[in-house]
Image (cartoon, rainbow, N blue to C red):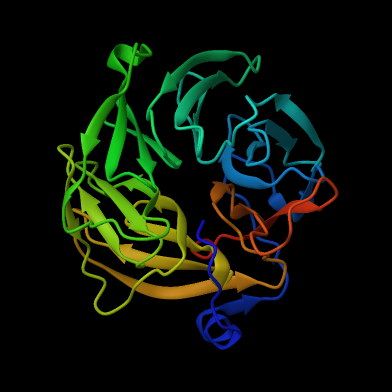
Length: 314
C-alpha cells in the first residue's frame, strides 16, 4: 500500500493485460461464475483495501475510511455495510472455520474479530501503543499472524482449541528483512509446507520466509522482485502476489519450504485501478480497487473486479 509512483513504461512492461474476464467453468463446489457479475460496485467514499471470501458465495471488503466491513453477494453483486467500523482503518482480513473474521486495524494499531453471522465484534486487541500500520493477517498453525508495515514485528494471536486469547504476543523480526523508509512488511501467507510464513516487503519488493520465532530469510526469486507488493494468496505451491501500483498480479511457483520461487507470469486487467488484495472464489480471483492515486473524497467511486483464475483458465 505504498504511495510513490511507478512509470507508465514499467507498468506496461510488467502487465500482460486481460482485456475482459473470460467465462470459465466453476469447480464442482461452486455455481458457474459466468452467471456472476465481473464488477462489484462498492459505496462511494468507501476506500476498500482488504477482501475475504466465504462461507458461501459472499465477499467481505474492508474500508480504510472508517473501518466498516461491506458484504457483497457474488451471485448478484449487491451488498450492504455488514458491520460499522471504529473510525480507524480496516485492512487485511481472513475468515476461520468458526465463522470469525480477523481484521487488521492499520494506523489504529489494533485488530478485531467479527462474527460473520451477526456482524458482532467478538474481541478487540491493542497491538501497538505508538505509531503503527497493522496491515495484513493470516491464519495458520493455530494462530492469527498480523504484519506491521511500520514496526519490525509480527503480532500473534494464539488460538488454542479455537478459543480467542486475552492478548496478542509481539514477535520481533530478525535476519534478512530489514525495515526502511516507506511501507515494509505487508501481505502474509503460510509457506506451502505449513512450517513457516511468507511476507512481502512493499518498499523493496523482497519476499521473505519467516520462522515462528520471527527469524527471516530472503526467498530466492532468481533475480526477480515484487515492487509494490501487497496482498498475497497461496494455493498449493502457487503464490499470487498483488503489485498494487503496477496494476498486476504476479504468479509465482514456490518450493515446499518457501525458500525459493520463480515468477512465471504477471496478469492484469484494464479495469485494475491500484488493486490492493486478492481472494478466490470458484474459478475467479476478486480484487478491490483501492485507487490509492485518486483523491479520496466522500464522492469518490470504488469497486472490485473479478478476473479468471490464471491457474484454472481452460
